[in-house]
Length: 67
Image (cartoon, rainbow, N blue to C red; front, side, top):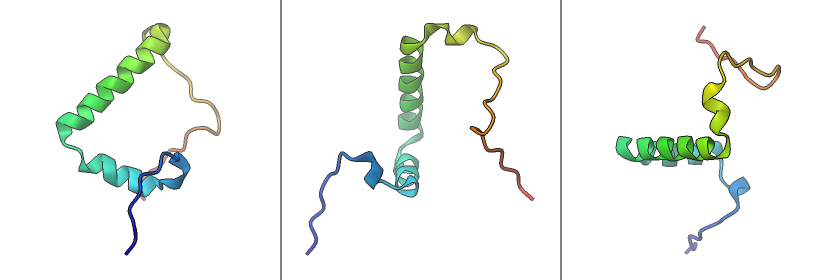
């Protein structure tokens, strides 16, 4: 019998596992998280709302398109 344990090491979680967990949340829970993240960003950098026409950093964004 294998024991299930809780790990606090983020590197042990795959992106697939994280996506599966997020998809398991109710829509209201997802929205709560979005609002919490937005609040956190606003507290860390209140001037972010004044930035317009942000330019992407080369090599940092990958654009995917359906072929």
